[in-house]
Structure formats: structure tokens, C-alpha cells
Length: 235
Ligand code: GLN
Image 1 (cartoon, rainbow, N blue to C red):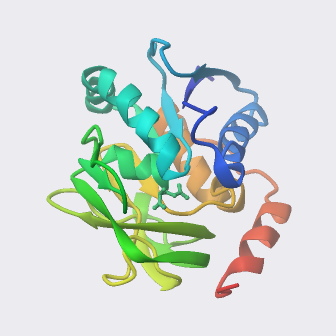
Image 2 (image 1 turned 180 degrees about the vertical axis):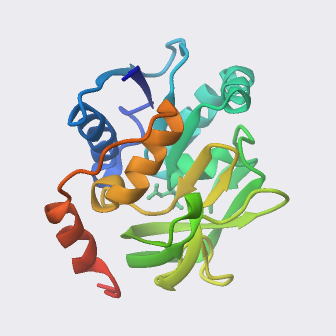
Image 3 (image 1 turned 180 degrees about the horizontal axis):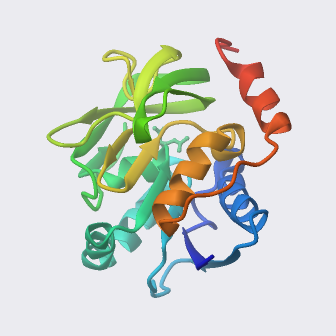
């Protein structure tokens, strides 16, 4: 098995609702198969080296201002990483900055790095609650569960497609019944929780995409119980 390098982008700024748990899920699920994992934390002002997977969590508008500046300073490199086939996962505020911009309620428009063809504008209400969505990504019919807390309304364009269809909750904008977005190997979602520990199948799909390896199944009884406990629940 290859050594898996995970770049954790700006964990000191974007890491609400335990989004760091997504890193643990990726790390442990690859280690449990015998793989070696290196996690590189990238904080403000630090350079970014090549990684197989890049992860960025969610956060408040205030933290997104600094992260927008940092991401823009590394935009060319991160777009080249996308085009090389690196896997990206962004949660909520991080997902919003994968697009062209996020226009908060107050203050200036925060520019994103256009890894995906999408944009976000702050809505009048805050969407808070559990989410169930269904997806057929990677040729697998899966449900995705998590928790959302955002006022941003995200709209997908062009070749950027949803992660899935909303069954319970609001997702991207509470209107078009889409949740998340993906383009090439870039994935974004509004699902906190944290997202990956409760969605083990999706986690393994990302690991297989990043390593180009077929992973042996694990005993996911606990993860599936946590996943199934949320299906169809709004609170
Ligand atoms: N600040 C953004 C919003 O409110 C993102 C919030 C988050 O990451 N949970 O939409």
C-alpha cells in the first residue's frame, strides 16, 4: 500500500463541529488496512506541499476572511493539484471557498479559488438540523447523513454536479434539493457531524480514489449504526 499524504488546510481557523474528525476517519480507515498515513497541517502563512488528499473544514464568516486570503495566495498550486487528480474534500465554509466566491451578509465578497464552478450568497435564514441525502456517486447508491448549520446558499453551475439529492434538510440552498458539489476529484458538502465517520462507504470511495487501490471491507457495524440512526431524522 502507498504512503497516503493528507493536507489539512487551515485547521486553526476552519474546524467547527468537530470537522477534524474527517481527518481521523481517513487516517484510521487507511491504517486499519495496513497503510501508512502522513497528515500535513497547513496554517496561515505556511507553504503547501503536494498531498494525495486535501481537507478543509467549516467555520464562521470571520475565519473565512483569513482563509480566503490564504487560499487565494495558493490558488494556482491548488488548481494544478486538482488537475493532477488530487482529492479535495471541503465542508461548509471550506466548501464555499472552493467555489468562485462567498458573499456574506455583511462585508465584502470573499473570493474562492474556483476549484468548482459554484458561488454562494448569504440567505435570510440559517439552516440548522440533520440532513439525509441520497447519492449514486462512484456507481454506488448511498445515503449521506450529517448536520448542517449555514446561512450560505450555494448554487452549482457548468460541469459541477451535486453530491446528492436532499431527502431531509436543506443542503445547498433549500430550494433545488441538491446537496454538495463535485468536479473532477473535488468534493464539497454542507454536512458536519463530522461527515466521514458516519459515512464509511463514502470515506472508502475517497481513499480508493486517492490511492488508486481497492480496499478490503472493514467491520463497519458501529459506523453503520451511527449512520442509520440519523437517516430520515431532521432533529
Ligand atoms: N459562515 C458560513 C455560513 O454561515 C459557513 C458556516 C459553516 O461552515 N458551518 O454559511
